[in-house]
Length: 424
Image (cartoon, rainbow, N blue to C red; front, side):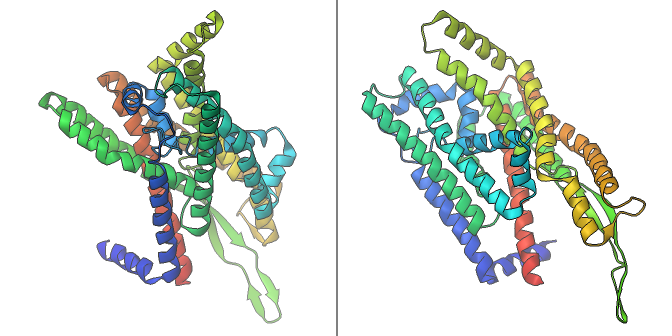
């Protein structure tokens, strides 16, 4: 196994094209981290640190900013607006058939057009989210009192930072290896690990040892579970019909179509967290008003989202539903069945066309059920342990670990695909 790893590492180093892609990713991540250390004007760092330390909402939001929220940098919004825009448009594909047709049936041109719509929608969402966050932080005296012009400039700055992050992520996807947006989230999480470990070492006491052991066990379970589900697949046998041309016979070979148990990867987790952030953001925003109705709504939302049972249940349901939703958006049984029929292939014992589509859809529903339940359980497992131990870091750390493992698996797979392509 070690020899195989060293051989692949040598191939990566020796291949100029692949080496340049990896160097581009490293350079993009360095730029991202450097720009992410530039704070917006008028930040009181001491009050910001005190405010963020007691807020699980902002700790989760910090994941999507790539770590840019802990110092209120110009990249404080991170990829959040782009992810929100993608969720909205993919939800709209279930309502508008033309949008679904563009995304699934028009090929690469349709996907590029869909991505362009996501970018355009990200601009007003970034401005809205930036205004809401800055207004909230101003209420908490984190931002020094500023004029209307200065506040408007800050909104423009953080909106531009969100668009810069989106642009950088897409460049990484196009000229690098893996998904650029996921890698930016991954980089923000990894960048916080040394600081978190140092803080744990400073505050460590023998009485905390059982809690750390529990955290380590949960981490191992999450890693093993994510790897197992990500690699699990159901092979569908496929046979190509024989074709005679002249004196030669083509086809007649048998292969299989791999259907993954979890087709959606880490996206259901990211989507679910994005949705759960909205009620908490609204509650924090309304808490600064003096209107009785606004304060009542804020108190209700805050109480609801701080209830670990309600929060965990919503998290479980959203991860479960988004696993099915994202699988339905990215995998179309009708299109697969049509492509098989056009290439002269068929599933043994199943008629080509609509029967094949129904057969694939039925199998996909069954295996996705296993993947959705398992992914939802893995997602809420740290929350369950948090309720038992009373430690908030378990919930946030478990979510971070889940995203990191999924991104690493996806990156390694795409890297191996690049290596395999160069071997052929």
